[in-house]
Length: 426
Image (cartoon, rainbow, N blue to C red; front, side):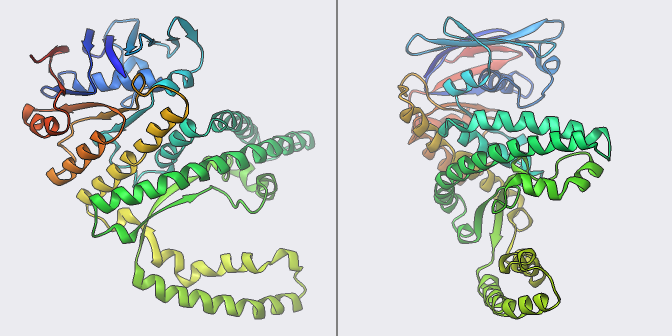
């Protein structure tokens, strides 16, 4: 567990040093520095801010860099210094480390804040990162494969942008890269699927508490980003002409998604009947196509089914994005369930790695806790957190929230934040 946090020259936090407990509550007006305190912890763990990616946006005015330093209960420590040019110096104990993942492994963070409440509507990237954060912590082989895939993908896209037509040598080079991409993609998808299988029942359990009336109709689904029944390099070669024209790689595990779907049970039963009828029709259609001379290996029964089903309305009607059905308040609860359901996995990862959870716990950052949740949802959130092995940092505009928090953490630390100054309440 973190016992001390020091922050220097991050926004209006010029020089802050505080002693920490398992639950830490920061109260102050807007612009006082509450969110900046959470930002410093996120920066320490992930090497970036959740508000701006450019360091010059969060480094204090005229300061050359910002530094965040933390101590653990066992006497260990970790620190990061971020410069204006985005270069970093990182230390774990007395050792300098050169990859951010070394710090992230020791300090897993989970952020729930108002700005993250749009992940249902934005592109797949934010939802994919939720799954990858789990895979990073529970599947040791995931991160090296992901890094290797990203390097090859960058090389491939650079080549695709150079010219809509590739020379024979460039095509051979691309084919070799595609083989590598296919190998890495298969392993990445395997790790993601395993992480998803652990995550899904936890999400379902929490959504049944936060949205009990809607829980039977909300479904979490993992989409790999490509047809995993065919090696990725074969699919990439089939789409090479179009990729050259577009200038980027359109399919692959970099397009994976975690879809939050709304399933209407009555429609599902009706369309399952239609789907079965369609499957019964397929052998006749295959015989017709073969009679016209189409090679059998170009039109398998499964491929024909995939082509026909969307036109029958199965995907469009049975499953649509939950964001299109739920109200804004309900979506907030759903997103809270998505994020909070990761916590038991992160806590379990600390245990399975042999780390003493009394020394290093997953850190949960809750920004402006009362802004996005009603009293019922807030109670569920606090109750769930109090039952898990984690360290909690909460910000709020006023101290009234302490009545609820103290019911779960009687020894919670309360801090008052004013114009970049942080003092602990007596």
